[in-house]
Length: 311
Image (cartoon, rainbow, N blue to C red; front, top):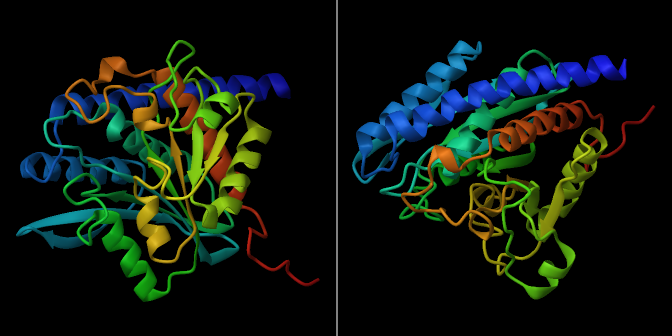
């Protein structure tokens, strides 16, 4: 049984590897810069993501709004829950880039993760609804503003009073390896965390720590390669530098999965953030175990802050 499971896992990761190569190549090489200033490429990216979701059986819906006189869109698909469809877990990743960069790791790897996690999870009917959102305009000059794609979406969720259990932000998943040097903002972190960047991190503000621990503990039951938690206040550099920040600001619990961005990837926000710098074996591993962790959590009867059902 264990051998069959190992073979199935290897075959699944091989497919993820091939699909991620295709997705990241299309986004970072064939399209390239995906910034608001390069609007045609931003639209091409939106259309590519919609087509990829549709090919996996989804019916993508756009949340459209205007930013500096141009129409931009978040892209939303979901898998309805089988037992508790009113409860929602959101998985999101931004698809834009900083101007002048191809954005292979930031954030084509996470878009690949979003698309592949949807493809894998769509073969199931988890207990809770899982909603996948590709966000526009995460990067400067829109970051933390009301025009940030995830800010627009989180605000609409708050207004509708969407029963969101928590949000999972995918942010840079493909830069890592045994020989990659890892840095940290503080000396005590350097003492307590690995010196090589061969791990994925689950990050959160203290207010969402119970979901970071939930993700870590669930992941670590499935994977021999452990995920590490990094929890701290927004004063810690980078800890709130992505779309989970928007959900936290609008009252939702949120976590981020990341290869730690500029603490590892020296190509961050430069023209050198290219496909040839990525480790697709590392990326496919991260996506596969993120999928298994998400499936496990989405089938739980009770999550943190929920009451145990009475018999």
